[in-house]
Length: 187
Image (tube, rainbow, N blue to C red; front, side, top):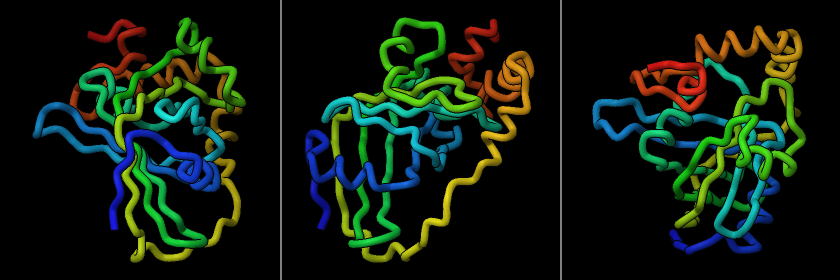
């Protein structure tokens, strides 16, 4: 049932573009650290090439993926069909964090509509694509996007967002300093 590919094929890209939500998985090198799985909504994912994807990462209560990528670069994306034919598609790769004000950000940011609260872009070089059946995934209906995060970010000044990120996004729950934390002088 499962099939493995070395890049994103046109049919995979079509499936990915239809999904309204995806999940990002990462983990620290330490076997004692926490595995992180983050759901992502909004129109924030871009396929830059068959082996290159990026997503606009918005300010949140943690920054685990960023910390893990800084430490070991391992990342997995998962897309699941909640409507239509069953399918699960995973992208396995090596990622990096692109911060605003860097040449890397400037190169990739034009692919996105920069949303309120954008804190970084996560870019990944995809090494393996794997599809599986998804036969047990239930059907769910899409009713729309939540605007709570947008409203929260729009009600903060630039300085308030920076202060929040300093407090909540500089160090992971396992004590790994994130790229934002490095920028802010964390040690």
